Image (cartoon, rainbow, N blue to C red; front, side, top):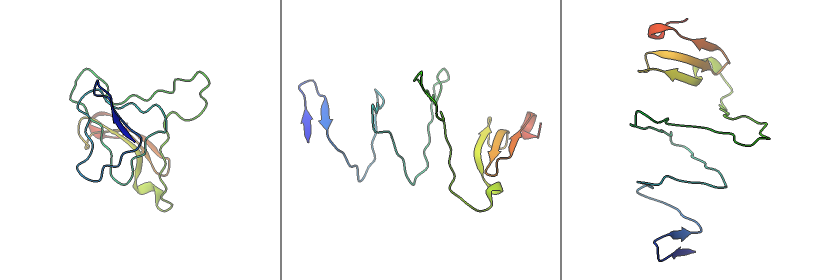
Length: 115
């Protein structure tokens, strides 16, 4: 079902974009239910605004009791040759913090050297 109100609000019960992508120029995206799944292609979030965060994750229920952020890697072999989490600044050669797939945590000092 598809409808457009007089004020321009368009309502769609389902949408499939097969070519050209999907762009929101202003207003953002609000998903009040159902969640969001991104499959197969890497996802990048970026901002050129020096005064705003790029990503905020909030668990806003007073009864919250699960993980705020969960990272799963389904690889079963050689867990030491990939990172679950890598923080860098300002370039990838300057590691700040990493968590390898085998659970090893590494904290780096100046110039990406082990602290």
